[in-house]
Image (cartoon, rainbow, N blue to C red; front, side, top):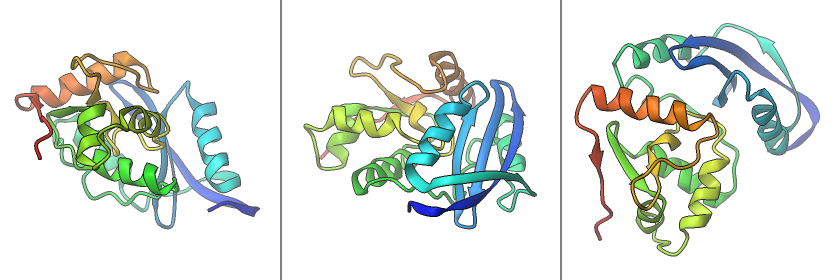
Length: 181
């Protein structure tokens, strides 16, 4: 929700095997998670959603650093249930919610995700909403692949997407979840 006042957001960082992770949160949950080098993307997405804001380093009320450490150490469901504060359009929120429903170790194509949402012809719109996901990893847009099951766009870079999918596969078989009616 956009406001004319400056919104104070909690902020912290986490060193991961794929680079430094930056995250911000408000009282409702994590509202941004991105990688070092992509600060301007993170700030632009936050500005579009909430207007003016300031970061303040504070203790992490959602224990995100602990849960990220667990995820990277192999407890792949450690990020499930973390509250998020997305602030997108109704369609974006629908797509982002569906992303959190893709199981660890599974992938879906943009078309399959669109069909699952009851909008079979909206693969490009799903892809666009996916590209505006403000909370990487927790809202696992890295689990969405191209129509040929190939790796396509990832705001944090394709090498990170590939690493995340390999990491999740290393804990079990990477599954292709087809859409079925």
